[in-house]
Length: 567
Image 1: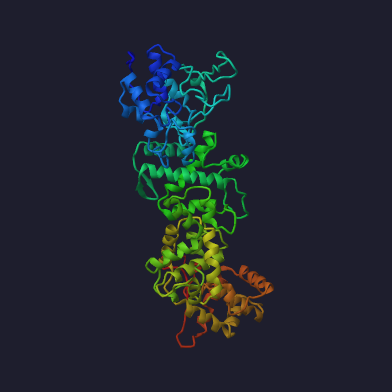
Image 2: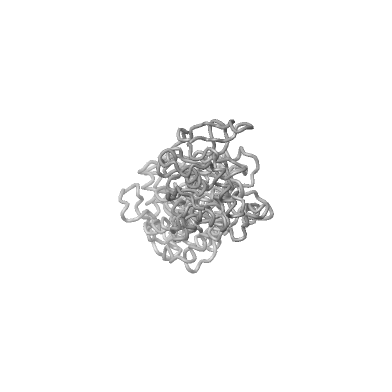
């Protein structure tokens, strides 16, 4: 028997929707058409849009004339997917779906819908069955997930895969016992919210991946199925992390995490959030991480999430692997995100040196340079950040292989090398590549002077007095002789660009540091300029006899082209 009324399926149309139109064109009820299919195939039709068996497809082909390959494409088994594997799926076996339910966000029945698309075409799209589909890229709105009148999911018929309402654009869900108790909500009038641009971009990438097109992930082209696997598994991971309590140092996370946290504990790997809005948000966040320019940038975007992993003996990677499948892409992102200090060390070891010699690196880069290039990238006090950048310059030298050695080369305690890189990396707001590019730019603008000689020069000033007395008589009458240590410390910080804690004037007590801050704050422009020149005016010399003259400070000339000031 071949049905007389034949129609061609439309692009993207789901198999069950196509059969409903076949039934309508042949003046059959959907139940009558299903009986014809079952009688010819000898199989149940429960998994009609999931993975119908070959006998079922052959029966439909015999009734409609539609090629089997076309019918297969109208099912989920005919789509690009991530970890779905229907090879061992047998619709004749009881509980067959349970064998594959752990492999992804799969639906045996139910569907989402775009009311506008349904009004335009009258067809239910196969893509609406995918839990990873959340938006309509044609009408720029979220997909509706449940009937606003009865609250039931669309196409929620447990006993039959075809709607009793057929092609009628009404809900048709049972509201009570009896055939007449049906919901009559018109589906094409349901209102849905507008989706954001980044969510629509994510949906477009998803649709291209489903269509078998390659997608760019971390700067490289990958198969559509790989992108889908990475995206869904990362989304599952983000859902688990969203429920973890925030710590005091955790980065601000998206607002949708509150909605996820309010839900009880869920097996997110099997069952995604019901709301298309929440699913869209979490999938878009996963997409934002995966579409970063490289793994370093992705690690920066993921860093705020990894802070939510509970601190347990099993370790971060083990905790994450227990909650999702860590694909090679995700494993690389996790490794980079959890140890930015090691990642920075590795990059510096394999980059060309950023400066010629440790002598040309101050203990702290000049504050003006730090504010311009790094203040918005490091969540640190300025003095700590300035020292960290200097350590990075030292660490880039081929002869220096540890952070402690970098600190030692600058005349700092090795403890600086142990603490600062970890502290700075934890609050890094840009990728390692971008950080290194900025450090390189800072190196090019540093004056090529011997900062170790500058430090020796200031140490010599700390043991002589004529230069300070002369400066006081001319520029600051009434200053006490004991204020010399403050003047030395000012030169140490602002001319030699060295760290306060290493000052030869020993600013070790809170009282001494408070006195120094008061002294420094009271200096006007002329006093600062004269102080920077005071030692050279009286001919202070280094132990090797080489006279050191301080460079004119930026506050004097205003000419920044010659580099920042130094000795």
